[in-house]
Length: 331
Image (cartoon, helix red, strand yellow):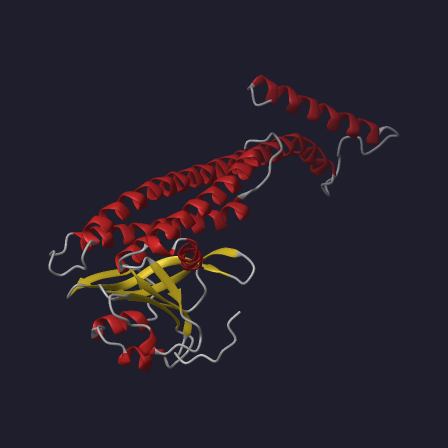
């Protein structure tokens, strides 16, 4: 573990790539801005925006336009991709990562790329970025251009989406088992976070796809070398995941409708039983109300068998109500 003091504000890591030698050297914490550049090399600098000195650092880096600097320090929470002056910059969506586990919470990766560098910034640790760094450590000679690193970041984001889709699919399978079980069970509370996650992922993924197509359609003299081919490959990859997420969204919606349907049927059944009970109790209520009136000459008011006759009349009224409900096919 590198415990040297950090000289670059917001420094998370940095790599210097040599395409000729097919190497990727990870710079230590004590590296300076001058150590990033070398002849026939390009670099990847990853910064943490929590450090308030990052904007001042970007002012010292050569090759960044004002718009690219703004894209690297923005706090916007929506995806953007801009091609201008042979540079690519903007914001990509990703998923956050805790210290000990991955999460499905969305995060934002800001980037700027040219033929000489790729600079990324973020506020929270991100899943795809960390996996991309691990792949660079395993196969450093695979990356000969900054656009290859950009492609790797988007590919890892696609793999993150695939992992999330598999997790959500398993969760929907469990919910589906309970929904179609004989025992009634309300799974709307459990289904709600799944639907929310799917909807957010689908919305942001559609935005990234539209931006990628638009960037690929830019003039050749505006985009970095090789980006048009990379954009076509990434668009094809993301469209495949988009279809899976859309199918998952449609399945979650149908499950929600099925739950609502079962809940409505259960409510109607309860109302039906309540109506039956009301129909049974209405005749006895009329009988007891009649004998409870404060009027003279009521039947059975004189004699030893008034209560028995009243009870018999109540039972007879219930039997008549049951016969009538059976006669009209309610029971």
